[in-house]
Amino acid sequence: MASGTNSVSLASVSGESAQRLIASAARKASEIGKPMCIAVVDHAGILKAFLRMDGAPLLSVGISQDKAYTAASFGLATDGWYDFIKDDAPLHTGIVHTPRLVVFGGGFPLFEDGQLIGGIGVSGGHYTDDMEVAKAGMTDNGFAVD
Amino acid sequence: MASGTNSVSLASVSGESAQRLIASAARKASEIGKPMCIAVVDHAGILKAFLRMDGAPLLSVGISQDKAYTAASFGLATDGWYDFIKDDAPLHTGIVHTPRLVVFGGGFPLFEDGQLIGGIGVSGGHYTDDMEVAKAGMTDNGFAVD
Amino acid sequence: MASGTNSVSLASVSGESAQRLIASAARKASEIGKPMCIAVVDHAGILKAFLRMDGAPLLSVGISQDKAYTAASFGLATDGWYDFIKDDAPLHTGIVHTPRLVVFGGGFPLFEDGQLIGGIGVSGGHYTDDMEVAKAGMTDNGFAVD
Amino acid sequence: MASGTNSVSLASVSGESAQRLIASAARKASEIGKPMCIAVVDHAGILKAFLRMDGAPLLSVGISQDKAYTAASFGLATDGWYDFIKDDAPLHTGIVHTPRLVVFGGGFPLFEDGQLIGGIGVSGGHYTDDMEVAKAGMTDNGFAVD
Image 1 (cartoon, each protein chain N blue to C red):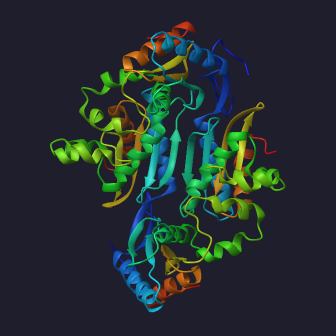
Image 2: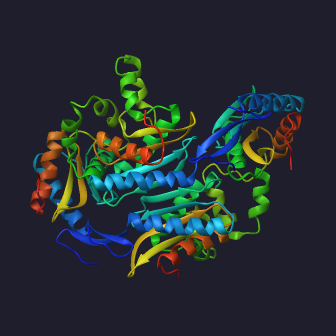
Image 3: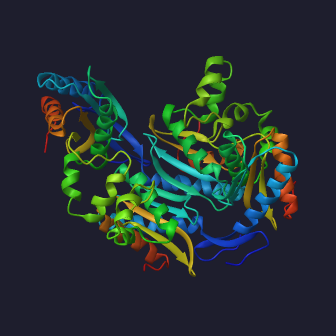
């Protein structure tokens, strides 16, 4: 990070980019016929844009935001968390209780030029559906999906 | 703000700057003989550094963090809030119930080159004492106090 | 405060003292025919002993604990808070929203040899009743009531 | 514990010691190239000092504080918790749901002359990294690591 006397410089997902991500993801969700909640948070985990499609499940309102938050928190896709903890007993037993931490798929970090600028979280179907929808949103907008 | 395709660029108070602010403020609090809690949050309101001096009041642990959060939130010193709402009945009645909003002195935004990079909050004495301590921390470290 | 290399020394209300305070206060509440909730917190504001007398109001369960917490927080009786803020508009408007802060009577700090060792909070009647009950508990056990 | 008529005496980590612990731990985290959050709580679990190093993960802000709280709570390192519960089915299933309890490494109790005076919690890498950083902070400042 570059820095001033009292600061470090950061990049953070823009409002326009967050809206494009949601539009693309929602288009994919419509295609597969599963209404979803789609959340984009900035690099600091704060909600940047959100859409609950008509008919998306209630619990998904919160889960989608937590997936985006988790992804932005460590720069790790939420589906990567389960692999990370499954053979590490203390984490497997304990870290799943961390407030807002989601360890199943549907949350992805957003990187630009190697900097973590935010996260996207999708919830509404099985997590494999959620992942497909989030990835479609990212790919459409030039974000790499690891 | 400069921007990439998907991002805006930001500056955020560094950990070293936050620690210097706390050290300077604590020195001033010691000078006036009032132990205080001193909190620095980043541009996104997230705790960056904190010190509860020995003997500082319990309630100040939370109040100092909320003052810093409030200041970083709108880029407005907390003592400015009361003047802002006092003759506006709906705000005077209502906005004071906002979680974490503090409308008395002791919280200041931190600006560098015109960018809001964080906030400092001090609590432990009367708010006039708290303001004096926060200002000493800021002045020592090159931050303008409006 | 005396101090070790890494510590300061403190005194904190004992469990036995907390129980004596509650027994004395409850006796007084019975005498005046008003069942009350009585809470004692330690110097750090953590619940040390508690009694809800039969028939004491529901809301008093929380209010009594918050009164004790407020008193231990600044070493100030809760009835002193209103006098402190009533002519200070920003505090009068704002600080009353601080979580757990109570600005009416019934909470008293507990001092021993000049050290703040905890707080007692009583709720169940008008705050003048609550104050009478708390004071009876303190006086019976050698605590000064300012 | 020594005691007065109404009190027990305690020792609690000082603000200066808390700052030294954080400085030492942050130096070690820098050395190993992993930015971390470092929290010190007093003997009562109340936040005493905190630093979020530049780039430390978001979720670590809370986890570090909870690790310090857990360690100060029972005087037990957080990595000891998993061993303690792993073969005790009711605890393994249930106690992990306790708010703020962390059962993986990175939180250590702080003892001075046999008295529990606080806790340190570190989060940012794998818990083995976190433990290394916390231990470096403790060792530098004369705290025994069991």
